[in-house]
Length: 114
Length: 114
Image (tube, rainbow over all chains, first blue to last red; front, side, top):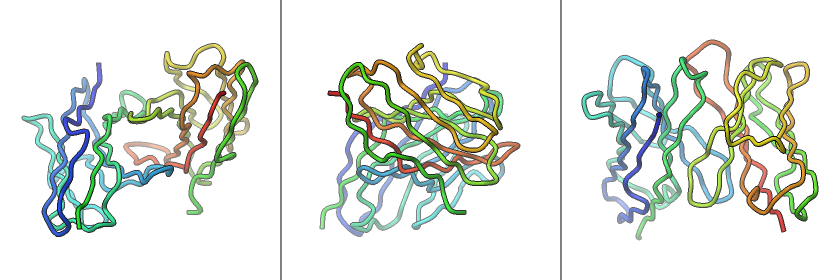
């Protein structure tokens, strides 16, 4: 069965500090990996995606993520967090073999301390 | 891109009533997906269309749920005889043909069943 695990439900970081959000997946096909961000009461905005090639991908708002096949991980990073980054972050996995439907993790809520 | 739109944004109904939600995808996108998100969880896949054909339905989609996409443009999701457990955010997403492709999400419809 396909599954995505985000081990941290909540993370609090100080403004200006670095951030890493963890994501591990279990998938029976070649995965495509995504990170989405959701502000309260809003839909999902795509931060970045990995389909193939370079395992370090850059996204919007200064975010990056690294795909590590051996660890089945796709962790999201940002070198310096801004107060406006406070939101909920979702890791998702899809595959053409499964109609490209996405399987999401439960999300990580990021709080930023000023 | 004008983005994915969903209507209504909020719906409050009494248990046992029927409700219908509408999703308008990005115009050149031929794939359309419905997801459901409950509090504290990531979105869960419900169903998806390629053009007007409904290609997959999740086991989450009970007999009370029906989705259509006439003419391969907008889609509707109807819930008959609503139950309190149907209270959730219903998200629609669309993507370009072929694959892999990222999904673009609408703002969602928040359903509250009293």
